[in-house]
Length: 58
Image 1: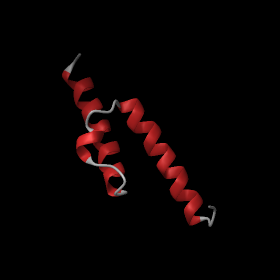
Image 2: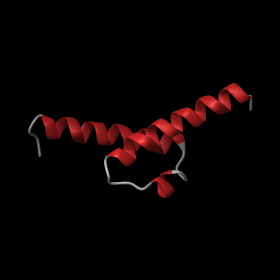
Image 3: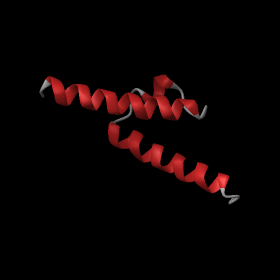
Image 4: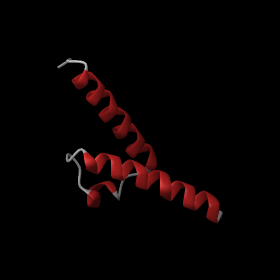
């Protein structure tokens, strides 16, 4: 794997980990073992939950 691709994947993974740890629901150590796909799915779920919460949904 080339260095550019490796760095891009690492940055993407770090972004998702940082955003999910801000929620306080997840810990860095557990998220660090997840794949980028798993992190992206959970990030999208969390964003949808936050959006519903802001709009007054349960």
